[in-house]
Image 1: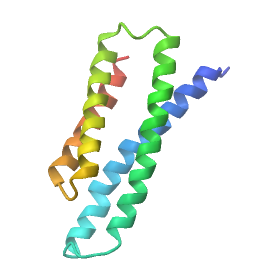
Image 2: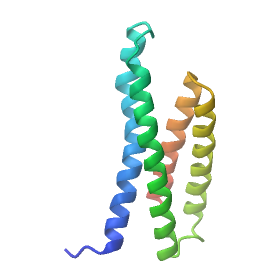
Image 3: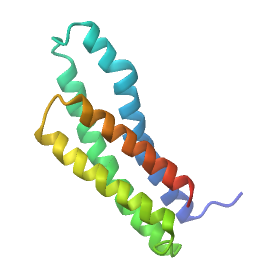
Length: 126
């Protein structure tokens, strides 16, 4: 098996998306239920969420850079699935920006997670 530089770019892109989406799933399935069981008064959630937020921003940036590079290299800009994926990425960026301004909105968390899963689904069609 021969790996190319583009295989590495794809791997980094997938790792960035796994960090973003996987972190959201972990927060939704493990962290938030424990927080709620504690009565929503625990001081530990905010530092965890803030650290994940920074990791998410880095992951989104890496995914954007590697995604643009791959779309250009493999001439994917005309693919309808890429257009769907990019639309969902734009929606995710707007939702994340709104989330940074409006704290403690569970609906935003759900929308970001669903949108992120839509991005993954659209990516599988490429």
